[in-house]
Image (cartoon, rainbow, N blue to C red; front, side, top):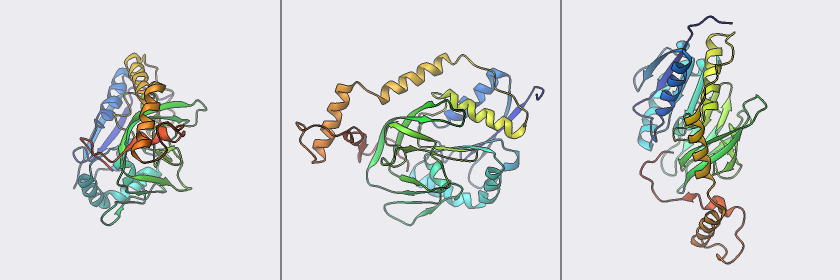
Length: 294
């Protein structure tokens, strides 16, 4: 067993360019959970024009952003691509959210304009769409423990991501759209890369995922590191339960929203039985939100 004190080294990529919808809260959740356990941590921030030493990183954060910021990050990522790929292949842990998820794939093809190349570590492509997926999501995840967890968060993206055979989904969608609204996948996994479309931020309301990332990051540096000390997580459990409630509104309200969406799209009359897929349709809109990301 490794003797304490131990330290987890976190690299936060593009903290100014990519940090919409409270994604920076993922960093705060990780560092606070370290502090509660007496685990040391260091944080290196690397924005455009800065190439960190990825060999010194145990956990890398790559968050969401708007269109213009994503393009700027994609251009800058060319200088970081080689060392970042090497770190990923050496099992450094990566949390990638929304635009960060897309940047780790092969490319993002917007509705207008040329495709934006990605790092290519994920066997995934993303196609742009005029309509957006907006709403609360619940997905079931099993990260190898044999004990499924429910992942919850808020999605807001127009990209449709399709995974290839070389990449596994992070979870299976129970409520919401997920990667593309068709195959019930949410996010992606490759080695120690955990990609998701979920904002909120995702880690404070899913402490089990935060602890999984920390445990894997500590194992990256200390191969004999044991299990993390448990935390009470009372506030986190309440936030998780509240998010689940938001994702699964009362059936009467859900049916009304689904019927209204079907009527607006010119499908069967509201008097007709609402197909099961209509519930998903109610979560898709082309209305512009206050903040946007791919």
